[in-house]
Image 1 (cartoon, rainbow, N blue to C red):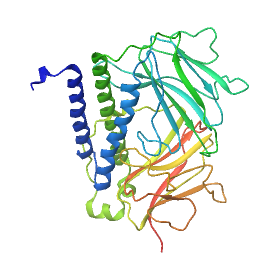
Image 2 (cartoon, rainbow, N blue to C red; image 1 turned 90 degrees about the vertical axis):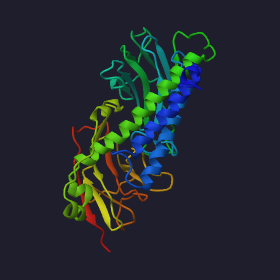
Image 3 (tube, rainbow, N blue to C red; image 1 turned 30 degrees about the vertical axis):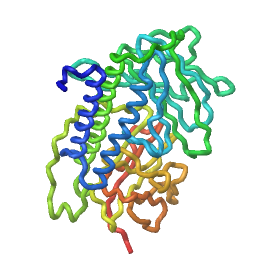
Image 4 (cartoon, rainbow, N blue to C red; image 1 turned 180 degrees about the vertical axis):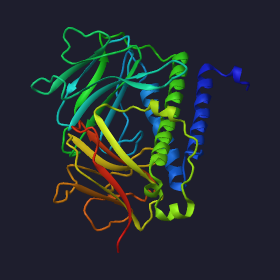
Length: 382
C-alpha cells in the first residue's frame, strides 16, 4: 500500500518502527557496542527506554491530567541510574498550574526538578533546568505532608513553589536512600489546578502526535547515553583507560566521530557533583582502584556504568557503594577495588563481568566544589 494511503495513526506507528531501526544503528555504529555483551545490553536498552517513553508520553501524555512514571527499577535502567534511587517523571504544560501533594516520609534526599525543552530548530530537544527545589528548602507540615505548586504565577496559598518558564516541559522527582528497603519512601501525586474536565477519548491526531514524541524521546536518550560514554572514554588518559599492554602495543588511538551537542539533551540536577573515569577491557587479572576522601555530602556513591549508562545487576551483586557501607581506612579515606573477582580486600565492587564502562562518583548536596578522588589500574596479586 502506498504511504499516502496509510491512516494517520498507521503512519505514526511506522515512523516508530523506522526509528527503532535508527536506534539500532547507534548500537552498532562507531560509538556503539564493542562486544557481544554490549550489543545485547544496547538493544535491551532500546526496549527499556521505549517502555519508559510509551508509559510517560503515550499513556500519560495528557498534560492537563498528569501522572508520574517511575523510570528506574532493577529491570529498567537508563541515563546513569543510581541503584535503588527513585526517579519519577511527569509531563507538564507551562500554561497550566499544578499541585504536587504528598508526604515526605524518610528518604535520604527528596528533590523536585523542572526541565525546559528547546523547540527551536537550532537547539531542538536541548534541556535546561527551569527550577529546582529540595527537602532542605521546602516547608513540611508536622506530619510530613506537603504541597508544591508549579506555575507561571505563585498562588497565594503556596508555601512551596517553582516558577514555570515558557519552555517548561517536565518534572522529575528524585529520592535517594542510604538504607534501601528500611527507609519509607516519600509518596506524592500531581494534578492540574483548577481541576480540568475529564479527558476526552484519545483521537487519532493526538495518538500520532504522542507517538512522534515517543520517537524523538527514545532517539534522544539513546544518543545521549552513547555520546556521554564516548566522551568519557576518549577524555580519559589512555594508560588508565586501556592499560599499559594496550598502550605499548597500539599507542594512542584516534577517537570516533562524536557529536557533543547531544549532551545538551541530558537531564542533570544542580544538587549533584560528579567525577569519574572510563575503563576499557579490564582483564581478569586487573583491578581499578578508586581512592579518595569521602565528600562532605548528604549522600555519595561509587558505581560502574555500562556503555549505555546502566547500572549492573544490583539485586544480586555488590555493584555500588555509599557512605553507609564503605569501609574506611584508618585515616578516614576510602579505597574501592573494581574487579571481576574478589581481590580479598574490603570494598570490592563487582563488575559482573563488565569489562568496559564509566566509573562514576556522585555527591549529593556536597559542601565541596570538586571531589578528591584518584584512579589507578593495577594487576591483581595472587
